[in-house]
Length: 411
Image (tube, rainbow, N blue to C red; front, side, top):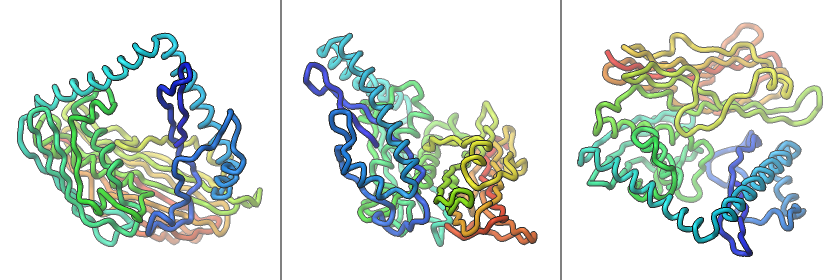
């Protein structure tokens, strides 16, 4: 996360920020946060539009592919500079007094919007439960939500087991952000997504739990847990407003990582990709095929780009017909991706959920298909790797991944 201040006539009037996912996190453990990389508190990285050399050296020393990361950081800086210039133009055009008043009104307006929507939801307490499975867990975790509506206030109170020795833990801010997204996407699409909207929504989970973890909990794969938190919010709101019920989407941020030495350049490489799956069906529409859902925000690189950059060859990339949840409206199809490894001594890391549980259908629709991972040896042997987080492969092996399909709607 890179943050830059914005000034007007010598007074700081705000900040711009951007978040970059740096594909530089491979072959690491996730028992606690100190194994997951360097933790950086707010730290100045540039002064007078120039890099602070000592700070840059500190960052580069902790990257596994520093050349790529240097370019990524420059791109983030450039994005912030564009943002600063635009922010300055707005303040200059409107004047500081008008800008400040408008900023406060935008927050208050969002609060009025969301409160009007919540007031239309029948008062009461609504519940939802989920079983959260992952190849990082020995057994699925039980998660629950009690959603209470009282006037224009929305209260989400979660129950969850203690934090785990794995990357699945969420911190409070991640849980809050997930809940804000879930409420907005299901009932408040036109509400401005800012802190004013959040005033009407309170979020609670037991401290030290997998949904509200404390140091030193690992958090790298928390996006998997965020997906299940969305399912809980959708489920509870569907109890309050039956017209909102739908089949569940694939509910996972399926991650496939390969890393090793490129045989052509002799340089260490790291390839990280997340894959979509089937969307859930609703009363007016079937599920979308091969789509990222909810809190994920990544897109897959073109096959041609992948094969040019890395010692990998895409053997198959398509939709899984049998992964859909049947119903009056069928769920979306999951994705099958098979990649041939072209370098020896390569490490593959796989992370997913919905491996032993399935995305539910809605109103009598059938559940979607499950995810899995496997390795095909050159001699034809197929080895299931769905339950493993990392495993070695050699040149000639093909790694396959299936992502879950979406639940259907209507019996």
